[in-house]
Length: 168
Image (cartoon, rainbow, N blue to C red):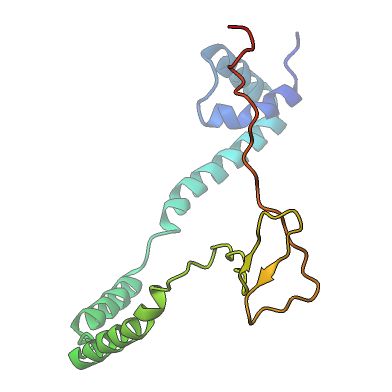
């Protein structure tokens, strides 16, 4: 297999960073000795790499003026008096909160919970029914008798027990 310029240029960055195996480094080195175009490209990439290695670490470093300005700002924040909340404001706040709680407390002891179901209506009039064959409803004096249908009372059930049998 013939080693071409395309193969060499694909491996130039790894060659500069010493990331190739010894056999591949030798192959790239031999090609660079024989090909002037690839050697020119190699020198350009090597110079750019060296320049980046020297200039990149300086990008994030602050200068002396920046550090002195930051230190002055820190000192002014440290030496500035702190604002404190006056004690009487805190006392008034606590007093107002206690007053609101005292006013709201009676409503918290509501007798009927909000989720309770309503009770069934209770009858207003009392009715007494007799067991006579022609039962007539006897209403109280203040109850109206119009449209009233008497309801017979429940009678005792004289049926034998389920466990009782007719044989002795």
